[in-house]
Length: 222
Image 1 (cartoon, rainbow, N blue to C red):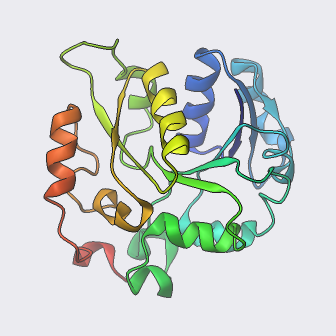
Image 2: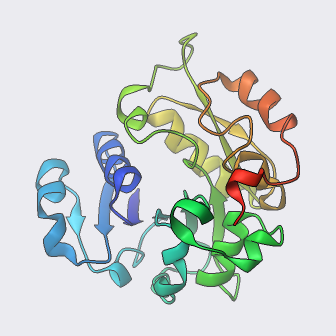
Image 3: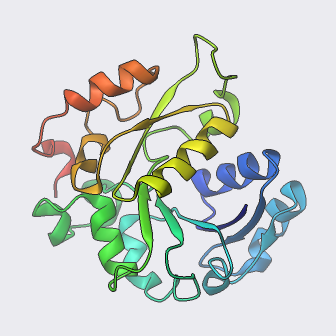
């Protein structure tokens, strides 16, 4: 696949590494311009591009930026074809980083809010994934299929085929993707929930999702 990645921090950088290792073509962008990504591009074989070009022609796009930075990215997905799968890895940290975001505080799941900002016409297929795994684990924790130590990671989306694409990507880098339902229920994998950051197998992920409390924990509210 041709994968565009918007955001080259810890998660974006290691997804670039993981996906290129798995044989995918990657375009990666950040807010500072492609010149700042020369080392990552040289290391991985990815192509560093301007942010608005990451989605052009891509089969899948990953948006991996702080929630507080999302509004400034308006238009970044304009070049994506209708129906493109877009993965949001973001988490809302109002006290540490993002400040108060009214929509999320009112109960809108994080990825639903991101989609509202970057895809107001709803022409793209959104998936929430990769938000509760450590960046280093993306490169070191993967295991072959069937390994008893293989970890599961939740994947939420409204479109079942988009969800299947991301579960396939997870499988390719050594994780079991666990169907976490629709985006409206993706609050079950947000920060402060039992599955967030947990090292669980697929069955454990399912149980953790079922145990998630609906109310956002106080530590993750403004």
